[in-house]
Image (cartoon, rainbow, N blue to C red; front, top):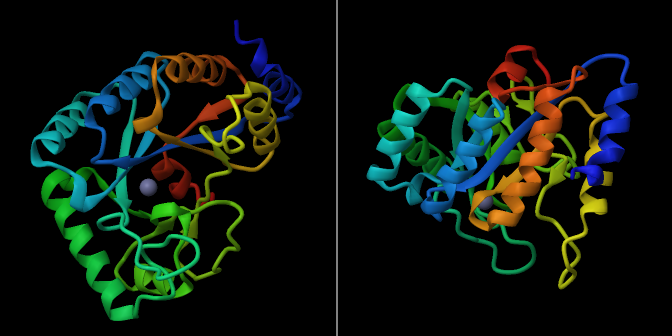
Length: 247
Ligand SMILES: [Zn+2]
């Protein structure tokens, strides 16, 4: 059934110590009907998950349902800030909400407003962690985050670390949905990426619930079954990894 995961299974079998993994699901606040099936899957496999929430997109009713779920969850669900409105401000080039086109005052304003809104909606559950939309932001953003009391920045592992004291970087290393443009899903590519990332500690895996249909959830369930049941894998929240000082 899950033979496609053999490359990762072999890495785990041969690992001299337990390898750490975390899952970050982005764009919470959008496609609400697809969020709970994903959370059900993580709960079923007793694997923790972190949710990157778009402050401007989160509806109060959805926030209430999420708060109830977090309060009663037997497996931890982390929540943190994902940009502000998830809009592009760059006139050209790669999309970015917190990019070079924005001056520090505008960035600071968005960061403060976003954190305030999300705290109003989700309360104490919110960790002082930040995932920028499209996994990109400037070093200025990093410095502002630190000034505002954020402790963790999560981008893509391909982005060079800022090295800002007090701001732990915890990048994602695998995009579950990434595939060559127009190409059909190739599970061997996903498995190879997972196997390669397992040696990086921790191995962050990025999800987008919006695009997780039944077929995707089934495959993800196979990965969760492997990681949740393997003696050499441990699945963590970003909060617990941050407490260990691991990024
Ligand atoms: Zn996003």
